[in-house]
Length: 268
Image (cartoon, rainbow, N blue to C red):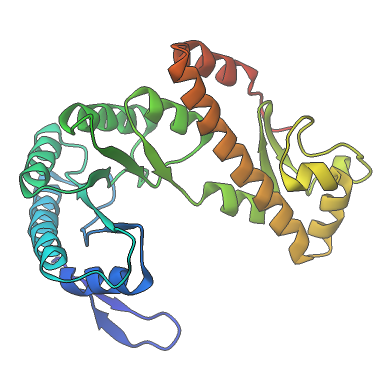
């Protein structure tokens, strides 16, 4: 049974989230991009479960859009609302979801329900289908993905926007991304290193601190270590997509992607 009632984990109170309430919450905080309330199933999900979730998401999307259009913004800047494509791993449901959202009409479209249990080839297949269905002249946003190689795959398939916890979650474990692979700065071999996380990187962490210093901060559970690792990872991701954009403009993205993937090694 589908439910949009959530339990507050700290003191146990229950809260009902409606499409209208979600819009109001995002109005109140001034979100630049507002996401509609949707229903997510894990993968694999059986067809009927995916169908029910898709239909509920579509009903909520229409209510969300209607409520946004009938209320006045609280801020001077424009807030954009995105619909979310659901449908599990089923091609017909994904197409029906995309068609229904486009009929309602949104400022951009998100591909939801991925990176929740399916394998990489399935994720790539569903993403490819969804970008084929969605309009090219509006933002296409892949939710919850992912690793650097997943970002490059998504860009190749026509995705414009991404979000994921991986850069910060990995940083909290001492893992940082470089063009040559991942580093675990908690490893003892970095203890006396005077190198930056990645030579040539222009992030604040690499310009001012060594691997050895960050290793020490992490080992003594000093918050600065986590912040520096996070700073580097976010910079790495931003640079990756900036370089991808440049490669697309120069009509060499395929070569750029292969260069990045070929340079990656196992964990360092």
